[in-house]
Image: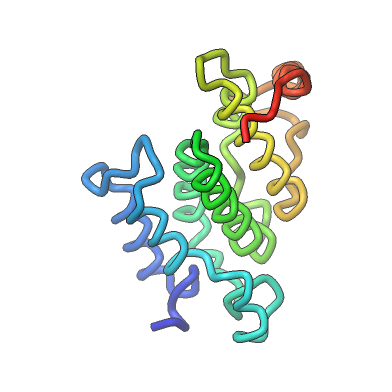
Length: 181
């Protein structure tokens, strides 16, 4: 079964993603423990898997191109639920975002999987009582997307996506924030 995990079987990957994104699974608004376990065990290989499977980036072979649509949907959900106020769980969630990015963005065709730009800018510009948690999560995610995923936040925005001015405003707002963790 291990050879079919991590996006190397489009049918199995589609089933896993549809299952965890189903509202009955309970991971719409928070990083549910089952959601976290599925990501860790079935969707993204551990970073140590490089040595075991002989691949650079974990888990042997890269994910199939047919899995890109589901991987993007899953990434967008992960982005929304990754922020967490407790330091331990925030670090766990960000580690999963990093492993996901390294496996599904860096090892696959980068152009097919894009982080949700709206979510990043919404978190960067948050003004709620948990704004600092959202901002720091977005900054960490953005760093992973830039470093491992070839993400370009300033490319020509599509309709409804954040503009250069919105990106700059969000990033500048975070400069004055204090560290919550």
